[in-house]
Length: 140
Image (cartoon, rainbow, N blue to C red; front, side, top):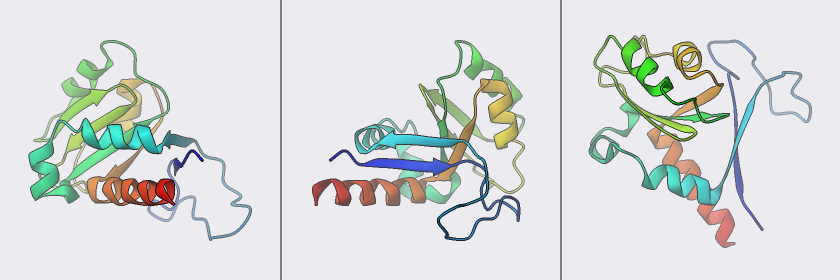
């Protein structure tokens, strides 16, 4: 059995697109899907292992629908005006938010605009928990 991780984009954010746990959500959204093997790769290829180890709540993984066009990473990095650090790897973006997510100008809207594709982000604690869950399901 192949285990997959599916992430819904822009659901239950700031009171918008709220969904209860029911069979039909009534919300149209983009879904990013990765296999457990892909997920292991996301964790292994993290270019910020020090931050992941000491402050994972200020590290985010962004899961993109498609890989950005060549040169798009430079557009995104050029738009960073704060202390955030950004790295793009295929269909994934890694971002360190040293001052937290809340006040950062590196938002989902900015990321999607500069990279030309949809995405959804999760903090590193969530990335690790989903990875552990995918591994547990795959081994059972």
